[in-house]
Image (cartoon, rainbow, N blue to C red; front, side, top):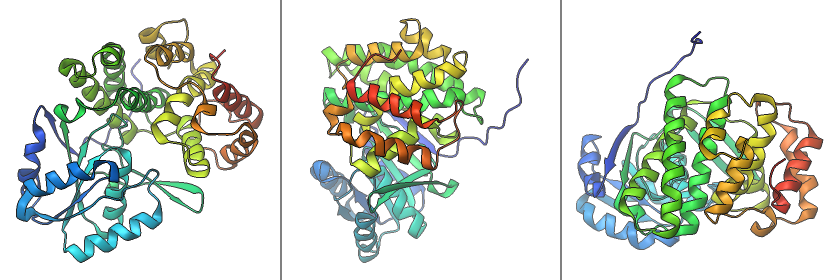
Length: 353
């Protein structure tokens, strides 16, 4: 029997293909704007400058200090730059750090956002903003946070380093994983997530060995879009809570943290909802969803240990305490002892039981 569900509908305009970066000027015009502040991280400052030059008079300026976990202090600098430039919209070029900064500017100014993702992390289709201040990451959701336009250009992903390819893809898979058991899941996001899993399972082993394979890059970017849509329309649970704790309170790198946690958070909840996580088990094999993801991550060369990301074993108790203090809704009880063991397993890099 088909269950009841609510699906509010997709509101973000998506432009997907090869060479679609060239569509940015007309999409700004389509939004009714003419003064875009181009955003990036310092690492992608050159790309942001090239884009601003291509925009010509439509570029109000460039701000290249976007940082991981969207620090409030950086947002304040960006807001000052936005206002000083007389901008009326933002173009965020990059991964989750730049997308988050664009969202933060929009929250404070009402600016329309155009996002050009260059990784697979998948925050661009969501209504979620996570901000960090004084060692704590706080997440909020609101329809006004969701970007108006997302331009996916496969060509921009051709030079994505292999390591970041794998970790940001596993970050995206985490969105799909939590979407399968979310209380507000729906057939649209479930179908997109199943398709995304298969696309990633096919594309990532190819990209490990042939990172400029255009067909596999298109598959992976399509999969990232599907996972991002899922995250944008369902509730987050244990996995994202732990990622926010480790990123916001311990400064761990975002995509790598998601990649290491994914098999373990999947296995933790698989004990309660194995039937709902069957698409992951069926896609990656090994008899269980958690084990399948661990073996897949190992095979594509992704990191497996929190210890390798800079987390000390002495931090695990504090991380567990923070994680259970204000837990997200989850299909399995978030018990402190269970979370502490999960973190220990992830710190050591063991295959999930």
